[in-house]
Image (cartoon, rainbow, N blue to C red; front, top):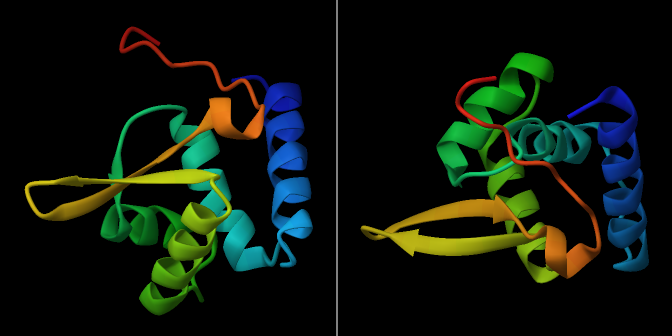
Length: 106
């Protein structure tokens, strides 16, 4: 995803968060970036936490869980249970954002 596409996606998602009555804090932005950078695929809360922690070292696992719950409520993310483990993915068709899928060759 190009820088311009990522910025546009993040702006669209930020508006959706604000319309839901919340602010886009640094921690929430770091979590959002994990999904924007990933593009497609499922992530567990722990994977999101470890990836976001690289960018924002002060983030806590409880913040990740609360934010994931909030993003699911706002329909930014979809929660899917696989082998009794919750996994999360972006729902671009729900939020009106186009997120290109990265091929394994890139």
